[in-house]
Structures are given as structure tokens and as C-alpha cells.
Image (cartoon, rainbow, N blue to C red; front, side):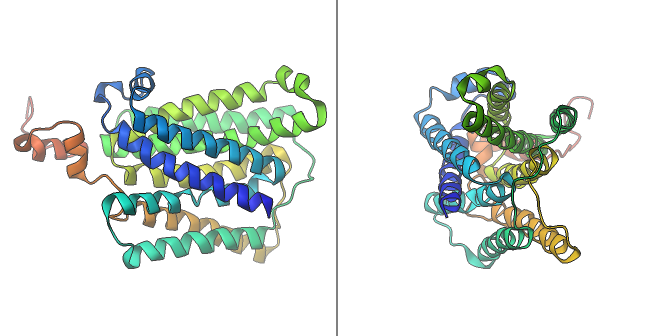
Amino acid sequence: MAVFFLALSAACCLGLGFVLQQHAAQRAPRADLLHWRLLLDLMRMPEWLLGTGFMVSGLILSALALNKGEVSLVEPLLATNLLFAMALSRVLTRQTLGRSGWAGVLLLGLGVTAFIVAGRPTGGGAPAGELRHWLVVGIVVGLTLLLVSLARRLPLFEEATLLALAAGLLYGLQDALTRTTTQRLDHSGLDAVLRSWQPYAVIAAGVVGLLLVQSAFEAAPLRMSLPALTAAQPLSGIACAVGFLGDRLRVTPGALAWEAAGLLAIVIGVIVIGRHPAMPGSVRDTLESIGAPPDDRPEEEDRLNGNDNGTGPGG
């Protein structure tokens, strides 16, 4: 029960923090995208600092949850952060949920329940050796770099989605390495933890993930980034947990079918909620945030969505 309470409390803090951070990031200079100075500019905004405070609280609570429960149990619960983001967004936008909103909430809730009940995540399996450990980490980092590279070649809206996916992969890896670190702290003490590479990898993944997600928040409305972030993190975390932590799921045909259905419902529910009108950041809001004059907004809207009307240089 403590794991559920800690994970849901973490999800609440993360959801509130993401909404506040995105509101601030939309006002950052567009030239700061994917540059470290973006974080320096954001630190001057009280709203972003408040959102970061919620986010740090969420990370601490999630670390406590990961210390008490398996990653494959905690990650689906953390995906409910979108429900809390939706709650705050409803207050800000004064939108009702409607059928699509309730459908997304239902899908996300049922997906989390189905995955946990069918998979019955447990620990106790033998941790993987160093080679497999590094192989899994290398795959996640490689996919992250690939997504960032592809994102730089796309229009802002699509770039935001890929950057959020990359951040989600890193956050899932960070959660798995956090559990490794807390386990080592419990069994071997602080000296052993400080001599290992995992805690430093946790910090590095957190900092790089923060830059990626703030760049995604800056590039486009929240609905273009938060669903991708929320869907990628549990998938990455569960893959890492099974890959090198020794987490075990039921593998009977029936259990695998329900686990797959649960994960699919989580992803679809996340997307449905993220696209709901209550989530802040319409195209008009984005254009206002970058200061586009009213007469120039149709052309700017085409650029944000990747459309070329042929009126530019050489058109």
C-alpha cells in the first residue's frame, strides 16, 4: 500500500510541475531551444521554479516508491501524472472533460490496473551482469540520441514530440538506475554507492532529460509533448527493470496478452488525455507566446506545423 501511495503522490507532483514548467517555457526565447542557457533563462521565472519544486518533490517520492517496490510496478502508476496535469489544466482553461476526456481517464486507469493485475510484478530475480547492464543502457542512450538527431530536422510541433519521447526514455532509465542505487545503499552503505557509476548516471540522465523536456515544452503546446513523455517513461523503465534489475512478470500466454493490452490502453489513454482541449496550448496560444504579429500568424502557423506555402525565399 505504501508503494501505491508514494507512486501516486509522485505522479501528482510531477503532473502539476510539468504544467507549470510548460507555462513558463513557452515564454523563453526560441533561440534557447536545446541550449543550456534555456535552463538559466527559466531559472529567472518564479512559475518555472515553482513547477521545478513540484517536479523535484515528485522525483523524491518516486525514488522512495522505487526503493519499496519494483520498477515494473511503480512505472505504470507514475504514468497517472497526466491525470493530475489534466486537473490543473482544467482549472487554467476552464474546460470540462467531456466524453473524450473521460474515455482517456478510463483507458489510463484500466490499463494500469490490467498491467499490474496480469503481470504481478515481483523482484528477486538475479540481476544481470555488467555486459547486459551496459547493453541495455547503451540501447536506451542510443535511441535517445537518434530521436534528438531526428527532432532537429523536423518542424517545431513534431520536434517537441520527439524530444519528449527522448526525455521519457531517459527518465525511465533514470528510474531503473535509481532503484539500483537505493538497493546498493541499503545493502552496502553510502561508500559503496559513491564508488559506483549508477548515482552519477542518475544525475546525468536527470539533467539531460530536464533540458530535453523543457525544450519540448518551449517548442510547442503541452499536448504535443506531455503524452509522448508520459507514454515513453514507463515503457523504458519496465524494459530496463526486466533487462538488468531482475524484475519478473508473469509470462503465461493469458498474462502476456493482458499485459500487452494494459500497456496499449495506457499509451492510448495518455494520447487521448494529452489531446484534450483542456490541455493548455492551442496554436493561437503558441503564436502569442512567440510574439508573432497578428498579420503574420497564418504564415507562422504553417511554419510551426511544417507546411510550406512557397512564399519564402526561392518560393
